[in-house]
Length: 179
Image (cartoon, rainbow, N blue to C red; front, side, top):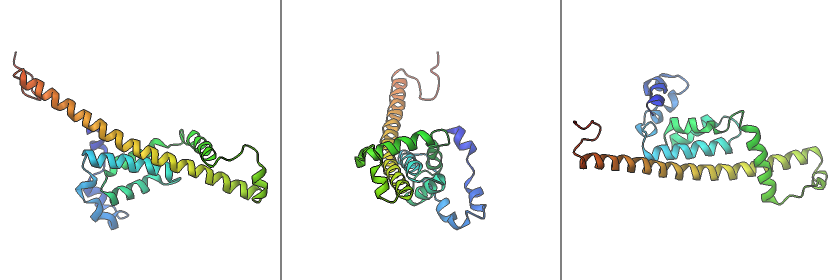
């Protein structure tokens, strides 16, 4: 977490950027920069949704979603990287296959000639793939949100139990016990 915080641009640097100046009032909100359970979970969910549902420029879309929904902006932007040039081909092939399964399309190409040849086949392929991508986006966003909330609670619970155990032994949390 500290590594990420050191590498992020400061709020002042973003406000000084001429391209971001129209959004400065939103960018200056502390809600989009805080690393808390709800903001991070929202950021991951929005980033994953944008990664799958938006074919190009996922990071700007995730950032815009994060600003509008008070999610953690850096986490939303970083979580879009789940779809990158390496993962892009398998994701789109799986999305196409998922879309074909959901639409119950036959394996033969008799429908494409009836729809108008190459153009009809292109429209059918894009629509089928996008249906699969929307399903992936909804599932990934839901699992990302729920997984983040669960992991955050587990982390806090472990810290709390460790602190209680140190108190019972006579030590103080964050300090070594005197020997």
